[in-house]
Each structure stands twice: as C-alpha cells, then as structure tokens.
Image 1 (cartoon, rainbow over the protein chains, first blue to last red):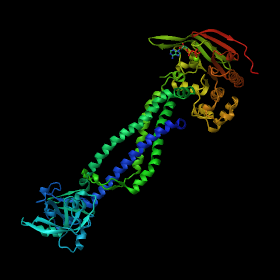
Image 2: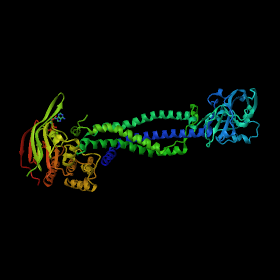
Image 3: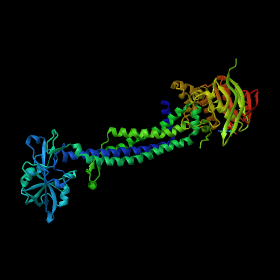
Image 4: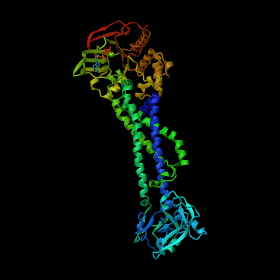
Amino acid sequence: MKIAFKLAFKNLIGAGLRTWLNVAVLAFCFIVIVFYNGFLNGWQNQGRQDAMDWEYGHGQLLHANYNPYDVFSIQNGHGNLSAEKTEDLSAVLVRQASVYPKGRMNPVLLKGISIDQKVIKLPIKLLAQSDVEFPVLIGKRMAETLKVKAGDQVLLRWRDKNGTYDAANITVEAIFESKVATIDNGQIWLGLDKLREMTGLTNEASYFIAHEAYQPTAIAGWEFQALSTLLKDFDAAVQAERIASVIIYSVLLALGLLAVFDTQVLSIFRRQKEIGTYIALGMTRNQVLKIFTIEGSMYSIFGGIAGIILGAPLFFYTLSQGINVGSEIEGMGVQFADVIYPTFGLTLLAGTFVILVFTATLVSFLPARKISKLNPVYALKGRIS
Amino acid sequence: MSEKIIVIENLVKRFPVGEGEFTALSDINLSFEKGEFSGIVGPSGSGKTTLLNIIGSLDSPTEGSCTVMGKRISDLSHKQSAQLRNMHIGFIFQVYNLLPVYTVFENVEFALLLQKRSATARKKAVMEALEWVGLEKMADKKPSKLSGGEGQRVAIARAMVKRPELVLADEPTANLDAKNAHAILQTMKKLNEELKTTFLFSTHDEKVMAYLNRLIHLEDGKVAQDEWVTAKSTR
Ligand SMILES: Nc1ncnc2c1ncn2[C@@H]1O[C@H](COP(=O)(O)OP(=O)(O)OP(=O)(O)O)[C@@H](O)[C@H]1O
Ligand SMILES: [Mg+2]
C-alpha cells in the first residue's frame, strides 16, 4: 500500500498540468459545496435565533381557539389563566382594529404585551418613558406600509368591550428594526394593560410566550407549542433550499469527477506501455489497480486540501464580515437576515472532504480495474485501442 | 552438472484472428542451461517475441509446456507469474520503456521497491547496477534527458539490479547505432560472465548474433536450426 501511494504520488506530480487541472476542478467543487452549505447553516442558525429572540421565546402557549394564521380566530381566541399557571410566561393579547393614515383605512392587528417583558427583544419598554397620551410601537415594514415616521399621529378605530366602535389618535413612539417580518407586518404593538383596558378583556391573553424556565404542563383549553414545532415551517424552507443545493452540487461534483474519470479512461490508452512495463517488472494486477485507484483518490485529496487553502480567505472573510444578501428577497416568505454569517464547522469541512475523496475513488476504481486487467503483451506493444 | 533454466516441450501458440486462428509458434522443443548467452533469430513475424513473452510468463502457451526455473508457466496464477517476473526475470525491450516521470535512479529502483527491500539495500544495489552500465553520474536525470544508448543502458541496469537468473532481451539494439549497440552488448556479456546470468535475446541484428554462443533460428514459428557458435570476444 505504501509503495502504491508513493508511486501514485510521483505519477501525479510527474503528470504536471493534467494533474493540476483535475485538482483545480475538484478544489472548486469543494469550495462551492463548503461555502454554500456554510451559508445555509448560517442562515438556519441565525433565522432560528432571530425567531427565538423576537417572536417565539422558548415556545408558546396558545389559547385553543386562537390560530395565528387565521384572523377569524382572533375574536374568540383568548382566555385567562390563573397567576400560578402563568409563571415564566409573558402574555400577548391580539385584537383586530383599523388605522387611518391620511384617511385611508388599513386593517391592523393590535398586539398587547407587558411593557416590562424581557422574553423577546421587542423594545416595548420605550413606551413606558413616553410622555404622549397613546404611544405605540411599530416595525419598519409596517412604518413603510403606513408611510409614517416616529412621532406621527394616526387615527385608530377598535371595538370596545360592548362591541361598539371607539377611536383615538395613537402616536408612533418608536420604529423597531427586526429581521423577523412576522412580528412587524400589519401589526401595532402596545402595552398589554392598555389594550386590556381598551377592550375590557381584563386578564385575558391570546397566547403566552414561554421563558427559558417554563415547564409545560397540560392545561385544558390551551395548547403548548414547543420551539421546534414553531420553527417547523422555517426549517422546512431551509431544508427545501438544501435539497435544491444538493442538485447543484451533484452536477458540479459530477463535472469534477468526470475530469478524473476521463483522465483514468485515457490512461488505458496513453499509458499502456507504462502499464505493460509495471507488469513486466513484476507488479501484480492488484498493485496496478491500487496505483491507479489511489491516483484518482489523490486528485480529490489534493483538491480538498487546495480547496481549504484557496477557500480559507473567502471562508474567513465571510465569517467576519457576513454575506450581505440584501432585504429584497424578504418577500420570499421565509425569514432572511440582511447579513448572514456562515458557519463552517469541522463536520462540514470533513464531511465534504470525505464525500469528495469517496466519490473520486469510486470513479477511479472502475477504469483502474479495467487497466489492471489489460493484457500485458498488447499493452507493451501499444496495441490497445 | 549443468542445470536447465528453461525447458520447452511441444509448445504451440495460436492467436485467434477473425473467425479462425493463426499459429505463431508450433512444435517448439528447446531447453536452455544456466549461464547461456543465446539468441532466437529469424525474420520479422517468425515468432521471436511471442516465444520470449511466453518464457517471461507475460503470455501462456496454447499447447505443450514451458517450464522456467522449475515452474510451468501455464500453471501459474497471476500473482505467481508476477512473483516470478519480479524476483527472477529481467526484461529489456526494443523501446526502453522507461517510466518517464521517474528519475534514472527511481526507474532502476522500481523492481526493488516491489520486492520491499530496505532503502539502504536499494540504494546500494541501484548504484552498483548503474556502475555496471557506466551511468552512476546520471542517477538524478529524467529519461527524457538521456540519449538512446543511455536509455537502453538504464533499461539494462533496471533488468539487472535485482540480479535475476534470466534476462530476456527483445531486440535490444534495434534503436541503437553500431557504437552503442556494441557497448551495451559488451556490458551484457560482461554481466553474463561475472554474475552467471542467463541471457536470451530475440534479434535479427548481425551485431548481436556475433556475441551469442548459440543461435536458434526460427522460421514461420518453427525451429529451423539450433547451432552453437564461437562468440566474439569481449576484449
Ligand atoms: N496477439 C496476436 N494476435 C494475432 N497475431 C499475432 C499476435 N501476436 C503476434 N501475432 C502474429 O504472430 C507472428 C509472430 O509475431 P512476433 O511478434 O512473435 O514476431 P517477431 O518474430 O517478434 O517479429 P518482429 O521481428 O517483427 O518483432 C506474427 O505474424 C504476428 O502477426
Ligand atoms: Mg518481435
């Protein structure tokens, strides 16, 4: 085995340009696969973290009638829970309402959350310091939709506890920026006490956001959704992207492997005298098979190493600077941060390396087997065509 | 007291050609003793290379038997015939078949690598073999930098480095000028005398024949004449 490695190594170095072309193609495959996977990993980690930080906390306890994807469920989707059951939970009350910026009607969701909550990053505590009469908090997407700035006043209409319309001027106290669109689009945040008072829904909540310490127990009329359940759609979106990317890698890898395969097949013709000589010098078929297979694997080993070396600047740069994907793709329905920091784990690097070497060895083995079975008499005469 | 290194009995070799068969060798009965410096001579197509390939276990007889160092070629497995070539037989070809990516030293070393000899043993043997052929100064050169005569001398060193019992040389002078041809023949003759290595040539070169002790004339795959002659002196 050691001899085979030594000989294969010498043959590759001796072959010059052909070797480096194959290595370059495989290094390119390696870099693209590692880079894109690192990007997807980074996206997934960041997306999950953002969703946790801004929306889901450590899970949510929803009123059985409340469905965040169904506006008609809001009307009756609320209830109250005794204080001992809401330990380590932050209540959110959701109501429907309309705002009239410049006289145009916009349906909105009013979301009330405790002014001093710490479970999500929403800067609702800004409302506590406000000196205006009716401060609210909105996200930058909502601000764009309504075309309002911080300090602007808008007319709000909602139904009070008797179901009759009430109206007031609300003031946009601050505009927050979050990568999570689902706590921003079409929503106006205000203090929980204020919303309860406006709607007469004292002590009521549509759902609760769980703190880390929360221990879910079965509560009749309420349903706990763990973080993994809440992130299911997001994870599925990333997964779909991964599957699409696997197709791209496969094509790319196939091209790289084709180069190796081609070199191997050509060897049957170009190197037949060499092969005949090996056999005349007393090499067994197995040894010839080993040399040629190892040559093929070595392309990928060199390719992987070259990929790590050549890719390192790119990997390190994007690790520290992130990749600016812009906010244009936000409309795709999945959460997308503006800047994604890829994660290149050892598993990713090693895994890609193993795949590369394994596949290259495989595509080298078949032609090498043919090579090892050449009739030495014909090979020495250069008669194989 | 003499020992037979090659015994060929009723050997027939046929090649499939299209629908039928072509008989390249028929009814060959020959034996060679250790230390012979003999040649198979005959016109092109007479079957010289075919016979040498069978003796070298690169090919096998269709009928009859060929026994080399007590081993029947047709009975050997691939591994066994590789072993026979590696340990006991050196090949010298018309085109030198040096491995282009290796240096002269590495080309000569190759067979010893396969024998798994230690690095020091290899180095000693290779340098000695290069001395035999007068190329010790060329050890680090690549074959592409060598002249034809030097290339063939490297091939001789490669065949001889493992001190095989038998060297098969298929038209070793065909690509050499007269001066180089004489030089390598003298080298081989000297090795034959000093190491008692058996040499078997295939040739139609008069210069080669002049050095041989025994000429086996092949015609159309048959032995037409088997004669012992007085060889040209090496001095
Ligand atoms: N694999 C083969 N298939 C068919 N015919 C073959 C094969 N190998 C050799 N022959 C034929 O067998 C005959 C003897 O071939 P061989 O190569 O042994 O001749 P040779 O004496 O070495 O000739 P040369 O002096 O040209 O090298 C030739 O007619 C050749 O065409
Ligand atoms: Mg011939």
